[in-house]
Image (cartoon, rainbow over all chains, first blue to last red; front, top):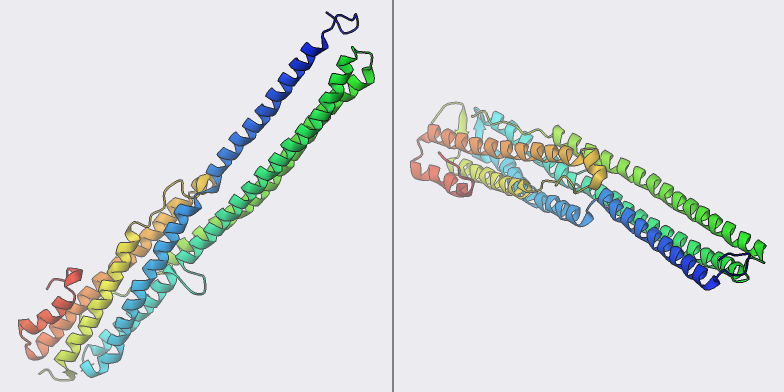
Length: 230
Length: 110
C-alpha cells in the first residue's frame, strides 16, 4: 500500500491522524490540568487564613475592654492612695496602660499596622495569586482552543491532500507545516502565560514575606511592665 | 495608720478589682490566641519555602507570652494592693477576699 502507487487507503490514514490528534489534544489538556492543580498548592489556602485573621480581630476586643478597667484604675488612684509607694503604683498603671494600648495595636489596629492587618495583607496576596492562577487557566484554555482550532484546519488540509492520494503535495506540506506552526504557537502562548503568572506570583510572594516579617517585628517590640510590689 | 501616706481601703480594693478585671480580659485574649497557630501548608509552597508559618508562629508565641506576663504582673499588683491595705489598717481577711473574689476567674491566689 503506498501513497503514490494508488493502493493507499485514505480512510485508514484519516482515522490514524484523527486518533493521534485526539490523543495529542487530550494529553495537552491533561497536562495543563495537572500543572494548574500543582500550582494551587503553591498559592496557599485563603479560607483557612481568613479564619486566622478573624481570631486576631476578635482577640482585640478583650484587650480594649481591659483598657477601660486599667484607665479606671488610673483615674481612681488619687482618691484611693496618696504618698508612699503610690507613686510607684501610678507609674506601673501608666506603663500598663501604654502596654495595653501597644498590645491592642499590635493585635489589630485601625491604622492597619496590627498582626491581624498584616495577615489581611497576606490574604490579599494569596487572593491576587488565586486571580493570577485563574488568568493562567484562562490563558491556557485560550491557547488550547486556539491551537485546536488551527490544528483542525491544518489537519483538514493534510487530510484533503492525503485523500487526493498525494497529488496535491503542496496541500500536504501546508497541512504538515501548519500543524508544526500551531504547536509552536501554542507552546509560545503557554510559555507567555506561565511567565506572566510567575512574575505576578513572585511579586505577591514578596508581599507575603514582608507582611510576616512585619508581624515578627511587631511582636518583638511588645513590652509589659513588671509589678515589683508596693 | 502609717505615716506619710493615706489609703482609702475600699477605694484601693476597688482599684485592685479594676486591675483584676483587666487581667481577666487579657487572659481571655491570650486564651483566644492560643490556637491561632499557622499550619505549615497554610501559605502554600511559597510560604513553606520561605518558612513564613514558622516566623508567624514564633511571633504569636511572643505575643501570648507577653500577655501571660501581663496577667501575672496584674495578679501580683492586686496582691500587693491587698498587702498595702492590710499594712495600713489591718483590714480583715473578708475585705481581702473582695479582690480575690473579683479575680477568682483568674485563679488568683493569696
